[in-house]
Amino acid sequence: MVTRWVDWYKAHRDILESDVIHGRRADARDLDWMLHANPKLKERGLLIVFNPLGQAVERTLRVNVYYTGLSDRAQVSEQGGPATTLPIGRDYTIDLPIQVPPQAMKWFVLE
Image (cartoon, rainbow, N blue to C red; front, side, top):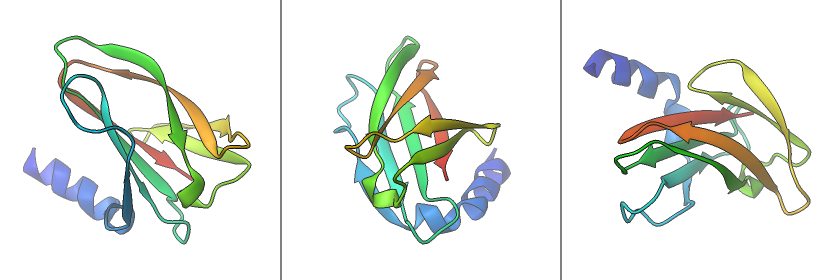
C-alpha cells in the first residue's frame, strides 16, 4: 500500500505542491474536498474528495476552477481513468457528478 501511494504522489508531485483551495470546511459531517491548482502545468487541477460518512454519497459538486486557468471546458478524469469533457460556466465553475463510497477518497485530474 505504501508503494502505491508513494508512486501516486511522485506521479502528481508538481500539482500536489501547488496552491490548495479548500472547497468545504472539513468537519466530518459531509464530503470534504480540496482543489490543488496551477495554471502553468499540464495537470491544471487535482481535486481530492473524502467521504467521512458511514454511507456512500452521490451528488454533483460545483467546483470553482478559476485558479486552474481553464476557461472554456475542462477534461476531467476520475482516478486516472478516461477523461470526460465538462463545460465551464461563466462563473468559472464546473458541475462534477461524483460517487464516493463510505469512508473513502476519490481524486480527479483537471486538464
